[in-house]
Image (tube, rainbow, N blue to C red):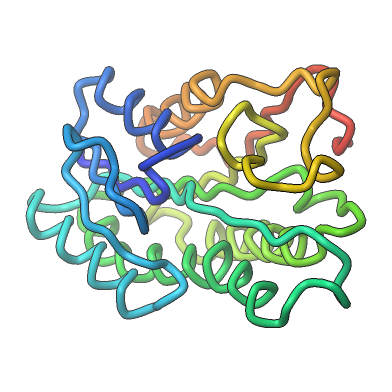
Length: 224
């Protein structure tokens, strides 16, 4: 199977690409940065709809189609609304929400042909917001609504799963002020473990849908 993964250069995206390869499937990576060279990839900024669409089409045509899409790319801009620049705040929405929609839209002709699957990546902060995370929460609440609507729209044609992960041990928190980093008691998940749940969703037989997966550390504070 050909599985396109956004954000595949690091974090959950990289873990998913590695899990996909272990299944004997073909990982096709889109990221703003160069990923591990063992993966077929196209670099693209998902904040730019044209770049996102080009990357999907290029990889799909190169691979001869798509069987699945996993939208793991995501960014954040921590701080109170009044303290985060409008450009930074809006870029979070463009990458996390609009980039997700652009990738899925471009992939649909290929996925409908194979009766493939989409796994979108929201967050527990897309169910329960926190202070100083309005951009991220808004984007992930948007992914939740987008995915639930998409599942209704595509039922019987393309499988749709909403992944809602809690905190993971990735570079996502690097470079933040200490107040926005998880403490040592957070007990974050290994992204490789979360990636296994993505594979589980992708492996379901036709007609069997895993609609939503909440995957978080047992001590997660942002869910329920």
